[in-house]
Amino acid sequence: MNRAPGMADPLIRMQQLRKVYRKKAGGKTEEFLAVSDVSMDIRQGDMVSLVGPSGCGKSTLLKILAGLHGHDGGTLQIGGGQAFDAGRDIGMVFQQPVLLKWRTILDNVLLPADILGLDRKAAKARAHELLEMVGLTGFADKLPYELSGGMQQRAAIARALVHDPKLVLMDEPFGALDALTREKMNLEMLRIWEETGKTFVVVTHSIQEAVFLGTHCAVLTAGPARMADFFPIDLPAPRRLHLKTSPEFGGYVRRVYDLLGVE
Image (tube, rainbow, N blue to C red):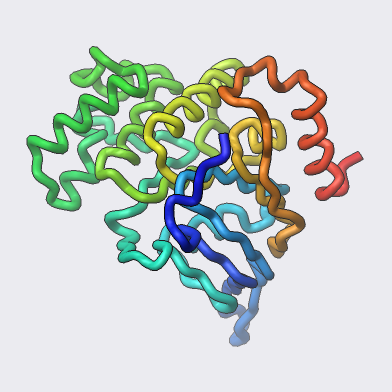
């Protein structure tokens, strides 16, 4: 399941990354250290899980990668030495599908292409391919309310891929789904990753999900986020749900528990 690098340099290189939030209160400026000392290399084609307790800075780190926040210390390089445009080369998937209720599923998927001014005909063909890939053939003309939560999130994943980004960032993408749907979406996520060859960075609170999905796992401590460990996950592919009962899977889960001080 681990990928060949695909380029000499990592697609993403973080070295001692740091983020401080500042706000004024009572005439004074208060500082909150959200991310402290995070370092990792992410290569093209990796599926990296970011796991840690609530408030540890996982989502902040994702926003820094997306270019939505700057960083206050350390270095961040994205692109592996090649040109990289955050607006063009990143796809985002959030915890909620965030579909526009007045647009059809097809038009929701096409939204990034419309914003970027891509060729409509080519983008529409790509959107139909993606809808087929995520199992939504026949639902292009439906409105969001006509789809289940899991189906809406599949559409959101297709939307994140329609403009052919180099990097896909996912912030708790399955957190709002019931347990069974979430497990099915984990399998779908791995299939989509295999088929597209994209680089994914996925934030999750679930240790089991982090181990099941990731080629690598980044474990962040309680805020401010500090890198407790960043390690590869060498489990047999293709991954199926019964893998979660194996000693090898349990070993990785225990490793994360130990890093987070969970007994």
